[in-house]
Image (tube, rainbow, N blue to C red):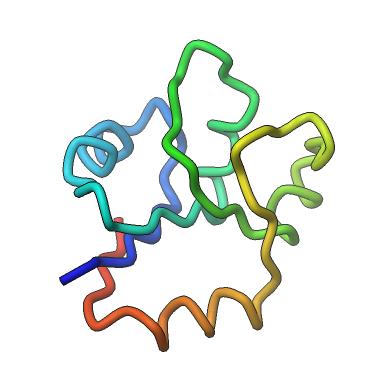
Length: 90
């Protein structure tokens, strides 16, 4: 059963690497709040994932420089929560 993992912790928080280790192949990852800062760390390999556009913009990060990450709005986040039977918040 695929799980939606929603992380709001910055990349230097212990929960961030724990979340990445917990991801199964068919799981979905969404970066929100301070977790979007992971988008600027080139040394941090991220799986294909989603990032909340409002949080990316609030931190003055460039959406166009991010590869492998799909930007979503709040409506997109709601759709993801509705389409996953399990949701895990980190």
